[in-house]
Length: 203
Image (cartoon, rainbow, N blue to C red):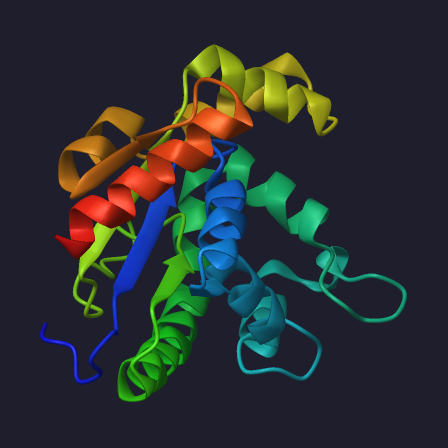
């Protein structure tokens, strides 16, 4: 999709769980990109009174709510990672609203000619390949590193491995992406990989 703005580069950043998408987003932000985190968009859409809130509560019940009536993400996450069919239902309830919000944001960035990136873990799973990306980046890490990062976040090894294996295989995301950004070394190596990838896209 051609850019309407002179400098508008729109990147879709995806990858597996705990592969370093947020870190890549931070690096892109320091390079002057406007960065939108689709997880934050989805979180806001599920806030009390927001567009997808009632749909999610109607399906999953009041057991996922806090005393203040907000959706407890850990409780919801436990359900959807234990039951793949429930994860599909949740995605069906939330993704249309997320897609609409992201499309509006991308359109605004293109109109303003701003280099931009969207962190979108389920880019391929949600069928959002057609949102006008100049390029899709897949952030990739070794499974052992991913499991270790998830354990550092407080998950057990069993829970960590279950979450990794519940997703589209990372190799498939790498195949579908335009560029793979490896995150198997130091932060400096990741920064260099992101910079080289952006330079390659710019050419």
